[in-house]
Amino acid sequence: MLSTIAPGSPDPKHWKVAALITPQVNESLAAYPPILRQILFNRGYTTENEARSYLQALAPLDASPWKMAGIEPAVERILEALKNAEPIAIYGDYDVDGVAATAILFLTLQALGSKVRGYIPNRFEEGYGLNKEALDLLKAEGVRLVITVDCGIRSHEEASYARTIGLDLIISDHHQPAAGELPSALAVIDPKQEGETYPDKDLAGVGLAYKLAQAVLERRSTETLRAEDMLDLVALGTVADLAPLVGGKPFFGSPGLAEHTPHPETGDLFPGSCLRTTARADRCKCHRIYLGSAPECGRQAGFGPGGL
Ligand SMILES: [Mn+2]
View 1 (cartoon, rainbow, N blue to C red):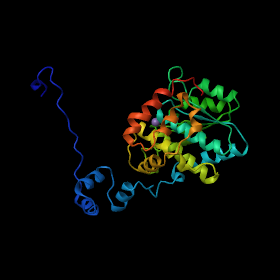
View 2: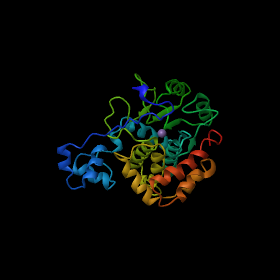
View 3: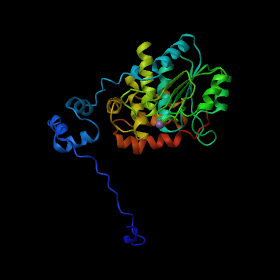
């Protein structure tokens, strides 16, 4: 009863207590100490196999990029652009997830010999997401294919506009689509779209960019870059975006942090060389990314001129 709370006293706490492990799961996780069993259960790991691959940070077997809706037509179009040497733009976002996602596809397409550029909209002048002026600018530069990362799923009007000015658009975004129709794009990759059966619905924008890069590199490999070389960027974007570290993400996080491949080439791409900061912070842990590299990267990205 509200009247029982003295004026000025803090609101009473409302604890949300997670469900207790079921006897059946308790039995199948018997190899682990009780407290770990309960934590595993709370995170959705209910069998010995699932628990082991989670704890060992292995990639889940069912996480092939080809299981994602939109990947196949997206890869087809990217390969066509590579074959015809068409200029490609990666249209990102100014937050850490968006910048890291842009860097992943930039590095991938650059390694495959593409004329690729990153585009990060200016936080203050352009705001979040696709905008028509930026699309006009890219078109005027000769870009034929625009790939969004971490944005675009609600840009219905801009997607139609891209079509009218002759730009092909691939949307990759992890945000919730609006009810009803998806934007009209050549391909839409979003684990939250209706009918999507891909198991990990909580990938950050950078996780989706990685999945797309992985699929492209499976079809057109190069000696200069492996998808796994970019796991540090996946770790950075995932942790910064507070995406839950379940599903395929421990796999992203663990080798990414352990290998920590520097990407000096991305340093020149983004304002303040924010991604160099990440490369320097070797042997870092999630909390060091979250409290160290990510805020620095976030502070520096998005304050530069739109377009980069
Ligand atoms: Mn994001």
